[in-house]
Length: 396
Ligand code: PMP
Image 1 (spheres, helix red, strand yellow):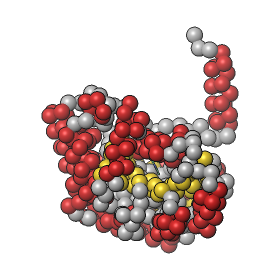
Image 2 (tube, helix red, strand yellow):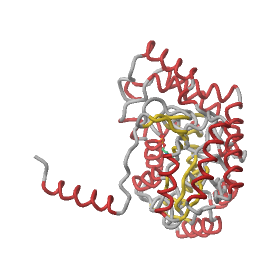
Image 3 (tube, protein in one colour):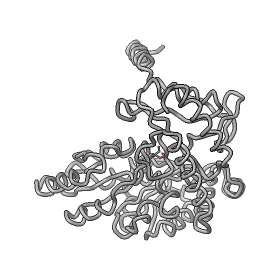
Image 4 (cartoon, protein in one colour):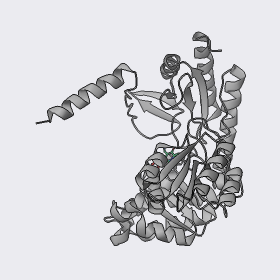
């Protein structure tokens, strides 16, 4: 029997979300998450995945995963610190360190987990964290879990950051102070001001942490936002995910050996949650190999991104301040944004609407994620649909 309190909690909150149009219905896809997906028996051009390089369906990754299942089994069987650490995990971490240009790497079961793990392993209630107001939910939760004082600074506003950093340090209230930022912001596609962040960190002796979920595989010829700015020696934590450009699942922190050794003994998901499966580790290693061997996929990603962005701009759409493949098409009004995305769906294009509270009121957008796996014909079809619907709704 369900508790009455739980039942009334669920009734009330689900009704409220539905009334406010915020109840997210899930569209299950039939088959793989490639440039074209099947939903409800119909194929759609997919502009909503984070599979930047198309690696989620890459044959070499699939082969590596199958071979790992045969040689190492379906699961890791234990947490990393008992006997769940396999040669496959160590190989992945070694390759990632080489790729990121750092001394060492620790990997986790997801990017979300990684932020929860790494922030709270280093920061505590006697510390402060300066956090960009648009940072990802996993950073926010990781900061909360640490119990450090959270000091939010205005989005990429370096003068606000400097003022708050100075105040925090001069107050003498905190043992350690960290600056934490996304490398690439996932809703707008803009890049963090890392050179300025490093300057402020050096001036006040602050710890630096970059969540590069959307920069890894994308910027710096694939090695990420930190490499893009040539700051590999200046950032303490380079966090990344294996679930987006790498195409698999998992997260990691790249940094100095001493820091990574500390995370291995103190970060709780590493100590208390089972390691990623052999197939996941082997497929991720293969992906890193491919990125180190050639920049072809990265070049293709950028070529497709420029093509889609130029096309949308020429049609008269507002694509905001994006500097990366993340391409928001800003419609404004929440209802219009949802109608736009629904019409795209009817025209065979899958591109999700993103509205308040994920983005500010009146800044509703359809977010497009071009990948290396799209063909120009697919992007032309998407642009044709944008033109048709844009005219139909009086947006262009
Ligand atoms: N950080 C950022 C900026 C992200 O966008 C995401 C994924 N939405 C994550 C962390 C979490 O990564 P994962 O999906 O691997 O858990």
